[in-house]
Every structure is written in C-alpha cells, then in structure tokens.
Length: 236
Image: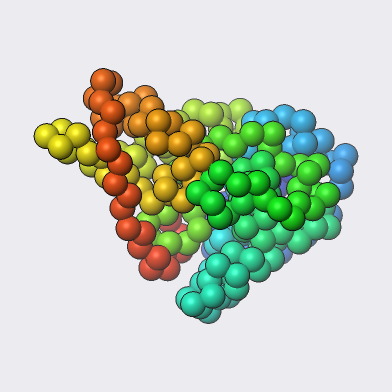
C-alpha cells in the first residue's frame, strides 16, 4: 500500500524534481492536505524537519524550473524567495516562509539570526518548529552554487542525515590556518549567526565536527557566496 503521509508526499515531490518527472500529482496532494493530515508534522519534530526541508528544496527546484528569471533578478530576495513555491493544506508558501517562518521557528531573515520575524501568520504559528536546529543551514538549497547539496530527508533518520550533511558541507567549505588560528567558514554562518549560538556556537560546531582542533578558539572569517544559478545539486 502506497504511503500517502505528508512526509512521503514531500519526499516524493523532491524525488520527482530530481528525476525530471511530472510533479502535478504531488503538488495537488500537498495542497489538499488538512490539519488532521499534518498532525505528525505539527507534533513530531523529526517529521516536521524532514517535511519542511523536502518542501523547501523541492520548492527551490520548481521555482528554478518555472521562473529562472526571478532568480536572476536584482530583486531576487523578493521576486524569488518571496514568490509562492508550493501550496500545503491550502496555504501558499514561499521559500522565505518555509525557512524563516517554519524551520527557523519564526525568526527574521535579517539581523544575523538574532531577531524574531515580525509578521507571523496563523499557519506559521501552528506548524513552525519550536526551536531552530542550525544544521538546517547545511541542508537547505536555495539554488546558488555555494549551497549545500540536496538530500531527501526521512523522519526516521533525519538527525543522522543532518549530521552527515553538516560534516560534508563543513569539510568542503571550511579551511583552518593553524599558524594564525583563523577559520574561514561559509557565509551562512554569518547570515544566521544567532541560530548557531553566536561566534562561540560556531566555534563549538567546528570543533564538534572535527574541522578545527578540539582546543582551538579561532578567529572567524566568512567566505563570499557564489550566487550563480545551480539547479539539480542532488546527492544520495
């Protein structure tokens, strides 16, 4: 019997995007969900994280496919990230709303991760995560060349998957100058510094994932971000 749970639908949509298959059936099913269908997403953290990550990453691919001009616009922040990407339970959601209103628990995209989101919808209040797991920043792909790779997340394994995604991305993007005790880290660590617990939290993350020595307290330098459009960055 086919799994028609919300998490399976979102994962199926993402897989359809990866394979270049029709997405209409998946999109219609997500749009037709109701509050009862979304109970696990509302009540279980792992289900919520996996569901919204897959929705976001699928939404990015759909926007890049259907509206590449919006990504290339000088007003990308509004025209791409603010444009509806998909509909869940009758509510049209942009990438901004999924990331900041739901996955980040209602935090502003501005203010380096320290400010709350000022305009919060009833949908966001009902379905947002209670706290922000900073590892999502190594799982969200907004279509830029500097973004992390895209994985299909599963509630049963999402924490292991996030650990793997974090380690892989940090290994690929962080360099450590031991002589100067300086770590060059990805730009998302600056944009969402508050999500990581400030500079101390970023250093702890680097130590925990073995990209700097266990006793290091490096100065942080933030890398530039390559905004070149790069659709289809899927990995297993």
